[in-house]
Image (cartoon, rainbow, N blue to C red):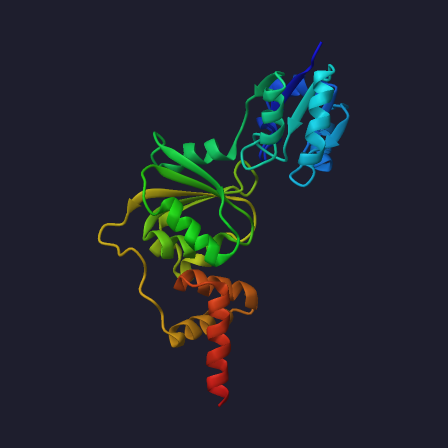
Length: 289
């Protein structure tokens, strides 16, 4: 008799958020396919679960999914978990679900906490219509084009995930590509240092405001479809002298490293980090002459 595939939600920060059903399933299955076996191992150890694990992540899933699906067809009870939240939501899971469906296997979703729904609930933005966009491209030029395409038109709240160190760049590119929107930033949801930051992009991307935004941790960024009344579609361009002056102001703080300063200036001026670097080098060469 074929086995079953269980897609199990795991806590995104606070271990108390795991469900009783999830604990039961993780104890009873034959194997747990985990995005990171070490991280999942800590979770299992905390709850005294000894089920064996195997890795299943974006770099190996194409090669491993067919064999895992065959094992389920042969009777294996398999649970799939990711590092945090729901499998398949900007995490591995889609491929094994698709192949399990094609194989006619039984699939059970064990619901639980998700950064997406947690952030939406606390955002104060409309939730009757929303779009989940996952992670934006990491390269500034590609990210601007992507944001303009995804958010340039349309209604409803847009929800993005962002990785540590990239928040400032994302906010600057949002302002440049989409105009002055109201944004909610949910930081380290359910964890010890959870924080929420709300405001118009024109306010959040001011240099003094950016210094108060966290630079580390995981972020969910929610963007309103509404633009600020009377706001232009994009901020006016900055001269080289203005960019260089702002860079000098930011680097006056000895705790701010050069790379971080460039990222802050790029966000404030709606430029790429590469463009800011070029301006700094150009103005430096002029001053030397």
